[in-house]
Structures are given as structure tokens and as C-alpha cells.
Image 1: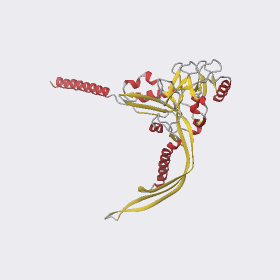
Image 2: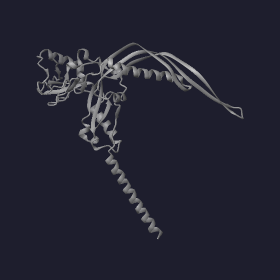
Image 3: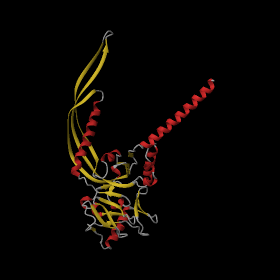
Image 4: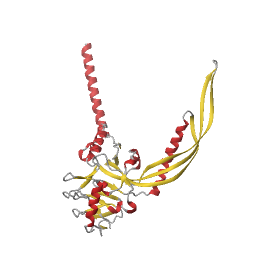
Length: 359
């Protein structure tokens, strides 16, 4: 049986959301703030005195999809239907923040979380600035209601650390020229370069979810993992969160690719001063490898326009923003015609003036 967890204000009973600027839980009704640890202690104390009558069940007729789960909101009694990998969301009826504790406990409990530091307003402003810089964007991307759909999501990541021993060989050249006054000579020396050494990698991130583009998540890196804290469910209140659906073992391949690329790039940097450097052989060995499970903060906006999905993402810790925008071809054509008409009118006026002057 899974428990739906909601954080309530001890003063007025209002909903508590994690507030990025203060790094505390804040009541949406009375504005009182609480330290995360204090809110956890209060919530745990309340739970001791309450019956656990929350239910996780499959409906007999309606929800047969094995990827969906149905929960009962403890505040209003409404049915909450969501993906089974969703760990935190909100009730569609009363809006209360809810956390599915079974998705963030036991083996699914994250080792750490980086709390949101960038606010929703910051994310909306960055999106507006990005859109305004593009003159030929379809109107839907500038719509106020659309911008308000930006959501804060804790995205699951695996953080891999290891020491890498590398043994790399390169072929390289050095070319120099000289002249005896009559002829110019070019000499090319050939070298076999060998590089050996070790590099330590800490917390190489690999996304653990199929819900968001891995390329987009890598493009908003880096995250400062040193600012991560021990996981507490209170940090999820007011945000969406997904647990991983790509396991640690499945993520190792991508981690090794990133580690290999970074190692070879670093070793190649030691060949400065040589030309035409090519890799002959590369042998890398991982030692003391380990992985941690983390939830990292991301602001997301997804839009479907003419059958294609456009996603925008912002690092919820640093504010780094990425996203693609389509070009409205109808608007582009209209602007081209308008410009052509204006230029034609100007030319007609100029020609008329010239004719009048030459008479």
C-alpha cells in the first residue's frame, strides 16, 4: 500500500510548498516558512497519530494500463491518475501537492537532491527573452497562458564516479621549412607519442528517465553536485518528480562514453605543438567505480505545433536555458511580401521624382 504524503501548515492547515529563494517550506495561505527538517519532524509526528487509510488500487473497468496508478487525494478525496513512475505531482481537483512515498522509499529512495534555486518567474522571464529574440515565432509560443505552463520537475539522474587509468598512443608530425636563397625546403618529422596517466571523475551525470530528452538534459549541465543535500520528501512539495525508469546498469554505457570522451580529450590536449595528431590506440580502465541516485531540478515546457514536439528546459540550480523554436512560414512569407511591396513603392516614388526633376 502506498501513502500519499501532503505537507500541511501547522498554523493554518494550508499547503506547504518548497520555496526556492528561502530554501524553506512556505505556506501558500498564511506565508509562514518552515525549515525542511522541522517540517519533516512535524509531519512524522502527525503521521504517528493518524490511521493510514490511503489506497493504491487498479480500477475494475477504467484504468487497465499497467503504467498507470490511481490514488485517492487525502485532502479532497478525488482520484489522482498518473504514471507509476511519478513520485510527486498535484491533485487535479484541489491543487494540493502530493508525494507518493512508495516511489521515493526503500531501494527507490534517492541518495541526494539538489533543491530548486531558480524560481518559476525566473524561468518564465528567460523563456520570454528567448522567444522575443526570435521574430518569426508562431503566436502560440508567445501566449501568456502557454508560458504559465512551465513546470518545475525533479528529474532522476545516476551520478557515476571512478578513477580512470589511461594508456594512449598517437601518431604526430612536426613540419618546418627553410631556404638557402635559391630553394625552399620543407622537412616533416614523424613521432609516436605515448601518454599514460590517471584521471578521477566525480558524479558524471546520466539521466535515468525516458520522459525527457537526454540530449536536452546534457545541454543544461553542469549541475553543482556539491550543493546537493540528503534527500527529504519535503523538497518535492509543490513540484513534479519522476523516479527512474532507466536503471543503473542500463546507464553505465552512457557514463563510460562520457568518461572515455573526456579522458581522450584531456590526453589529446597534452599533444600541443605537434601537427596532424591521430590516435593509434587507446586503452582505458575504470577502478573504484560507484554510482549514486539523485533528483536534479529542471524547469520544463513542452509544446506540440503542427505535429512536432518542441521542448524547453532550464537548469533549476544555475538558470542555464536551452530550447528550439520553429519558424512560422506563413508569417515569414507575409513579411517578405510586405517588405517587397514597401521596396517597390519606394522605387516607384524615386523614379517619379527623378522623372519630374529631369523634365
